[in-house]
Length: 459
Image 1 (cartoon, rainbow, N blue to C red):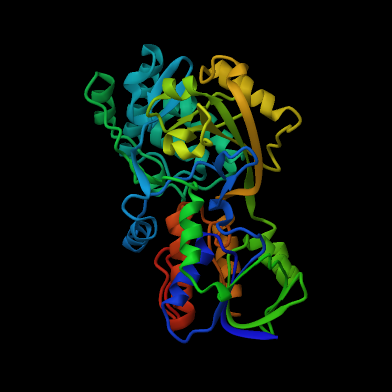
Image 2 (image 1 turned 180 degrees about the vertical axis):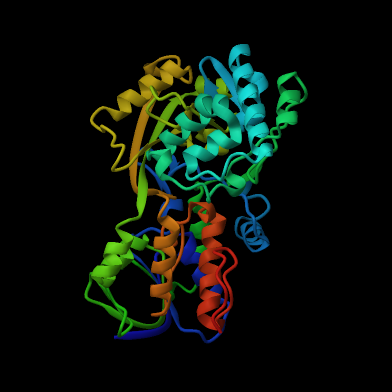
């Protein structure tokens, strides 16, 4: 049986962040195991049989951390990526509203704009009066923060589509920088025709690899690591936390001092096999994402221009977001094809299932209805992928479950980290996930704190 100081399971952003940190410490014995034969996890890119490049969702590169920003520049090189300024919009009927919706009410029809502004001002007055207690769930939060007009025009229908979960069963602790709460005065000025600000948020500018999709970065990063310390096609089947041993599908067993697992927290519980931990984590919820890639006429891309992505709150349309994927990089379309590509996302969950029998046909029909396509004949190629674990749902009981589970695992030197390892969407971007692994590895070696997850040190 092989023995290492730190064993890492999962070669997505979190696992690679851990491996990168571990590799910086000379003399530390570590190993990274990945069940797939590919690097990247949810952030890998896939080149399909026709030569189109696809991501598993609308990933773009921006960072909250100097470590990641510097590494991105180093790995891709100064000429290895495109720089984009975000151009995103929300479709409301026949109108396109710049993102964020609540900051650009001037783009709405007059009557809807009036209702949105009135609701926003009323919500601000109520908040200032102190007559209303804190919201108990996400549904109450959006009404209290934005008013009934914005809530019903965009916030409620869009979030129901993207989360595929009742908003009343969700907390609002995840919001942070992910939702822009407008200043009523600024909203009124915008509505009266003042210059609009489209720079809100950390992804107002972003970069994208010139070739190979988002996954090009993760592949290149993995190539800088000692290849003998990376095992692909190594699927963990059980974790013996008392004896600190992981068993794999091929019969291999690896002992460890510390285990960093990046697989979903509920799966880690099942690998350990502790009934109480399994029962605890069974209370967690998540959504799945169907990703549909379409090769389309060049005319579609020309009409979309520099638009990066579009949001669709209309409940009659099956998708919540459409990305102008070939705008990110022309290389996402195979050489020799005069065309463009679109990446479409459809969410589902146990509470809001999706009929997949004719999903592609309904997506294409929806794109025609929304005016993204002129007709179905503009589609020349289709690629599909389903990510079982798409978004960790911040349900009302999530924080209690996650805190208890991470503490119990941590007491056995098991650090569960990453988008689903720590089950926190609010720190689930690629850079956040990388840093979770980076900080977890440092914790294993030195006992230091993990600021991304807000965890204190233990030595």
